[in-house]
Image (cartoon, rainbow, N blue to C red):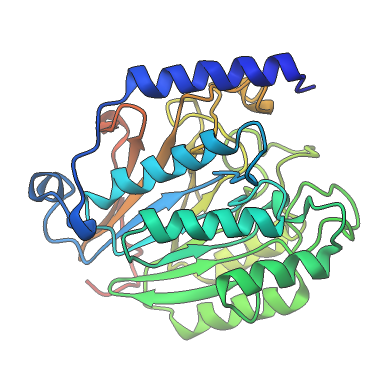
Length: 334
């Protein structure tokens, strides 16, 4: 249980860690990339995508509101030096899905995304407002994103990006922390995959597929997807899907099974800008996680491969030992 004492201790520890453990970001005039940093990110890319998750933006006045906003802002600014073509926030962008939280998130993105697109999908926390049923929570999310539905796809040079969203929480048939996708979303997914069979494809969903990354082992009431088996069957039919990214688990990238390869698909956990743990027990909640830690992933799309990297925002450094080059699916053109 997150007691007031634990909360205040976590806040003090995290703030001290941020102040002592990070160096000032270089100035970003109008979001201009630093040429040295841009070269470091790799030349010849067709796309650069910043993959973040679980910032849990809170309403002003919440005990950790200032911390989570500062940490997401720092992460966005940290990535801006490498000129991302877009940002993805893979679920739990807000802590409760409250209107005041979306307002705070919008103000933060306006200041720190430097005019670049930001794509979001839902997470379990999108449905935590006790006053909103699932339909109201989804409508609130769609108003914020400007979408007609909570899922979407985007074709970029050399990549097909798909963002799936959980649609049921309070009305879920069981295990409310899982993602539950509607029949309409599943049919839509099959359709967009069929439309782009030759493009390397990245799928993002907040909760991990069953038995993929650490903490998705079944049975598991916390991390799972109600349609996991059906999604696995779709993946088998569409080998262009080469990368699947999840959030939700809040585990550092250096822990075991943060990247696993199964049946031609690489499954990768994205970490969190809020807090991280080295084990599932440490990542169980804010009271046990490291509030000064902040990690995300970065995807570079090349003509002959994808490169997946890990960014430690606290140290403002790449974790180069975790760099991973993924071959393109055989059916995709170079």
